[in-house]
Amino acid sequence: MADWYDEYVTLEEVDTIMNLPHEEFEEYMFEMIEFYRENPVEAVYDLLGLGLTEYQKVMLVESWNSKNIYWCTSRGAGKSFMMAIFAALKMLLYPNEAILMFGPSYRQSLMLYDKIMSEVYNKSFSFKHEVEKLSRGSMGAEIKLRNLSGAKFLPIGDGASIRGERTTFIFLDEDAQQDKTLIDRVILPMAVSNLNYDPDNPEEGFQPTIVRATSAYFQFNHSYKTFQVHLHRMAFDEDYYCAVVPYTIPLEAKLYNEKFVATQKRDMSNDDFEMEMGCKWITGNENAFIGAKLWDDHIKYDDTLEPMFRGDPNREYVLFADIARSEGGDNASLKIAEIRGHRLAIVREKALNGHKYQLIRDEIRRFLVNFNVKIIWMDKLGGGEAVADLLDEDWMDYETGIKYPPILPEDSGRADGIKMIHFVVADNALNHRMGHLAKKHIEKGHFIFPTLFDRHPEKEVEMAYLDLIMVKKEVTNIQAMPAGNFHKFLPTKGSKLRKDRWTTFCYASLYIEEELIHKDDDELIIEVF
Image 1 (cartoon, rainbow, N blue to C red):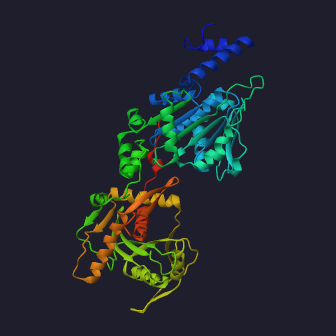
Image 2 (cartoon, one colour; image 1 turned 180 degrees about the vertical axis):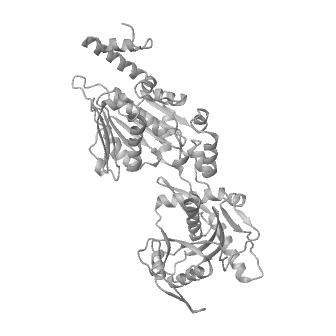
Image 3 (cartoon, rainbow, N blue to C red; image 1 turned 60 degrees about the vertical axis):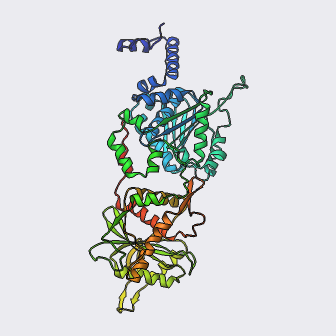
């Protein structure tokens, strides 16, 4: 009997096959399954009804029999799609596969479940026919097949709720963003037991399969070492495979077009583009994170602009406040920015070092009187909350005798004041994000400053210029220090500078990103297969 795949199978032959005696039919099915196990690309076409680009075919074939797999891909290159079809084929072609799929958060784990459902289950009769159980809830999602293979999509949390799981196959999506401690102590130990242990062959080898998929990140990240190990080992160890897919490869495959690349380059910082699109792992630890040359090359200077003491009533302004954690502390400043489209013009900076909270409250109130402030962005921890409590009451301007209503948080349920305080609760992840947004929006020319002078005939104006010059000094003397998966931003050694102006500059950068640039990344990333 010739191999079933030697020639195109007609409808008549299908009928013949379906009417074979039981033993012959069973033998035929074994042949077919063995063929698909040896030829996963054909299985994608025939069993899943999907097509692959040439680079995806290579990724699948080279990964199919490897045990340690690492995919470093550009944004939108089909990483989630490849994980979905890889997991689906393994479940379909091998019994008793216990697959666990993890994202850095449960929401991202569920995205992998949804990818299998949308790209495989809803399109493949073969896969859907074999599915016995589907579940998706707040504590996990699961796909179970008739052959006892299945995949679970779990919330990692602190690891306590998923201890005791056992697996033969692990997928780690966005590996660079995963918590290495949880990977080492909770996830990898799930694969130490041989679920297919045969007492008649106790010495038969067992090794779980681990697929790590990620965009490139900073070299201090734990995943960079794993990446280097896979690159080195794949040269002489067939159990290791590493694929690097920069944006040029899916661009050539017509997976996305030049417009998509141009949009990403426009919207990302240079570092982010190199990492997320170019698959380059960068040091990200220059002596000065934002050098003076980068500032001078990209900050927009407006010769018609001077530091402002009173705003244009026809324009809108934003106030950014960093308050010292202890009253009378040396780190406090206010920054006033005029909204100009998707840019911010920094029109005033005022240091408030050593001031009592009540005096800081009064300074904020005067800015609100003199500028058409749309919203206040303020740190919530420590002094920020204390000053917000002081703003939460009527205030009398003793120069004019005018009484002003309370200033309230934007989510306040009260109706007796003006809701305009937006609290920033910064943790390590948000501080990292804001620092890199500061660099990005400088590079994109989204900040406007008055031309900076250190002399002016009016002393008060000269002091206001010096405050703006100090913004430049602080921003260009910040060092990015590795701290776990993130950067911690500190003044460079020996600079004797503080961080309050840097902090409000970061708030302004986050405001540009979230409030002024109306962009949803999901609308820009369209996977076409």
